[in-house]
Image (cartoon, rainbow, N blue to C red):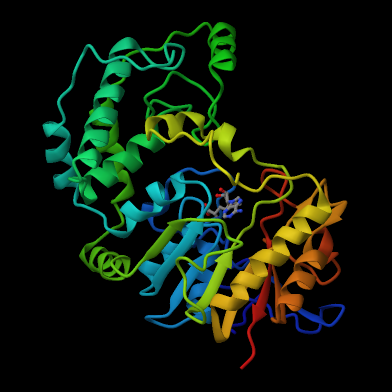
Amino acid sequence: MKSGSSDGTEDSVVDESSTKYGQLPVTVANLWTSAQRKSNSIHEISYRACFKAELPEFFITRYSNDGDVVYDPFMGRGTTPVEAALNRRIPFGVDINPLSVIFALPRLAPPSVDEVRKRLIEIPMESALHPDIDLTMFFHERTESEIMSVRKYLSDRRKDEAEDKVDRFIRMVATNRLTGHSSGFFSVYTLPPNQAATQESQVRINRRLGQVPVYKDVKSIILRKTKSLLRDIDNQSLNTLRDYGKKALLGVLDARDTSSLIKDGTVSLTVTSPPFLNIVQYKLDNWLRLWFNGIDLSDRKREPFVTSNMSQWSKFTGEVFTDLYRITKAGGRVAFEVGEIRNGSLKLEEYVLDAGKKAGFDVERLFINSQKFTKTSNIWGVKNNRDGTNTNRIVLFRKGG
Ligand SMILES: C[S@@+](CC[C@H](N)C(=O)[O-])C[C@H]1O[C@@H](n2cnc3c(N)ncnc32)[C@H](O)[C@@H]1O
């Protein structure tokens, strides 16, 4: 473990072994948010409650080696698997949200900007295409038929089993550009891209702002975002991503049972952030993105985990840890985010510590990311800064052996 000053400078890691929570050693420092650290542009896909890529990078570079398997059972946009591949680790990940694989996989096999440009030219734009649902409150009529043309092209390519990495990349970018609050999106001004407004609430937003959807050029927006995502990808990182991306294992699965995909004792490191109590409504937030991808979840047996009930959350976490124990190698680790919810009145660490221990893990250390830490500050009062969950506390577990 490196050490440095606690003033928030680059890489400062203060090993506060003397600071204990019960018997648990705690490290408090500016671990993954210093201004000097900047994650790769390939991560810039918006997803509700995603973590910064610097967080998995911190654990990957310290607790795994080249060629190890690094996993996230709640991979979301794929921050952990993508960062794993960039660091020459084999990326594994699952999420119950089918959009996760749509976001993660194409960035583990990125095409060149030229390949995307050429493919976009080939997509026929059919002006008579209109959606089966009313989207006029989001899109200009011409934009709407361009979106429909891209959607149809991608769907036909899939049906014909002709879909390739360029199509998958375009699908990912288009899904990401559907709605948002700047000129870089297909829609009129609306909520940020990871929180789709309903049709009714968009009508209200338009009325309040006195706005109507103006024409947006769908292909140019896709190309612009492609360039932006790939701007940090030089030849070396492209080859690394492709080499390690080839070995990726990603799935749409419930984190409680991944036995159909992941073998026992294969994972060296897990870095993950679980769904917290009912803070995020994944299905509602994603309705338009799901529609674009032709995904109907109405008949799905298992929903993304959403509950406001603490005992259900504990049971869920316990089952997740049992599966994590099964797939983790002897000596492997799990870095598990613990949240502070309901304004700090409920801290999840005790539930998470219990669940990890019950599954068989040893608890190694608690990491708290803090921009400014003084010895006198109350470490459990480190303030939350995002979406009602504290993203700054990670418990590190180790499987003995
Ligand atoms: C806090 S987000 C993780 C975000 C991720 N760290 C990222 O950077 O994008 C939690 C994720 O858990 C997923 N999820 C909810 N219930 C799940 C379950 N039972 N099994 C697997 N994933 C689930 C949600 O779809 C969501 O993507």
